[in-house]
Length: 191
Length: 191
DNA sequence: TCCGTTTTTCTAGCGTTGCTAGGATTGCTA
DNA sequence: TAGCAATCCTAGCAACGCTAGAAAAACGGA
Image (cartoon, rainbow over the protein chains, first blue to last red):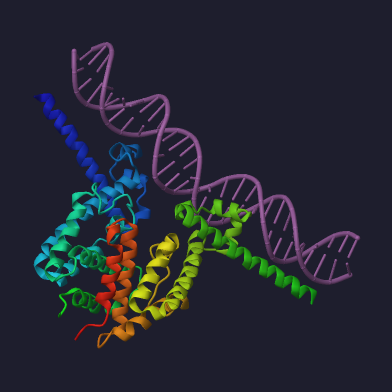
């Protein structure tokens, strides 16, 4: 009995430390970018030495970023679910809002962390959930078109807006107009 | 007179070598990714020592990538101009085709090389040309909507499709359907 | 043709990165 | 409390971008 609780405490401490690593990585990334997230600084933040990171994430820095990205997918899915009633405008706004609130994490989810992939059997559930949320809003307005394909295009538009906007490729003045235009274009057709 | 031709030859050799650096960087990036493009390998490829790179590009590796990205913008603009007669479907196809033909360069243009930015006074002409090509095709179908904003959204959709597709985020089977759907959605409205 | 000057190029090295081997330390078990 | 096992840290490797200072080459005027 005594042994059991001690063992439980040890594994609990361990998982807690693993979460602290990811949390520290996320904070540092949002504050100074992913380039500033080095294994040494990360080790310093959790007040342990470098090799400890590798006992939690054998894949090293990439694995830590992947873990952070998965957290991001879960949060994004939750944000989209919360905007389910808002229709196209609501979910599009929620998507862009989250991407702009956590730019570094969004990068980790989509431009870095390349081993994560959708549309496969081993795709994590949290990632599928994001697509499902978008699909739920697109489906009512898809008409006779394939809702899955339409969702992919809708998603691409949102993702493109986010990434081009961050890269200073779009005019900041047109921000709201772009969103309105997306909603208009992807809404139900008049025919 | 003699001095003059010698001087000319010298500056010509110099610019040629600068171009060889960028060319080598592009080749290596497409073959093995930008991570494989190190200053040492680059120096080896042009058969000079490392510091020579910095005499051509004081900004170092980032500057070399930026130079490659600018070449990419020029080529993309030319590809889009060649598809000007094809309307929405033609230019969308040309855009995606180029992005898939030169994936590493496309990354350099849009996800790396962050100091390049559109919608500003100091935006290079080659970058504006890309937007102008898209605008030329969007304008006839914009109707009463702002053609500039519509072009930004259209562009975002294309960029999103390219990046999500490369990240294995979209189903490969739906590739052609997505393109058809983009053309349908951004074409002239029935009203 | 020769020598001093200027430009160009290379060698060598700095600081930092991700990552790991091997020893030291700690905590558990009997 | 002695021995074992899990845990952790020190130290170091190879590779990275980049740069200072020496060596080499090309140039200029006599």
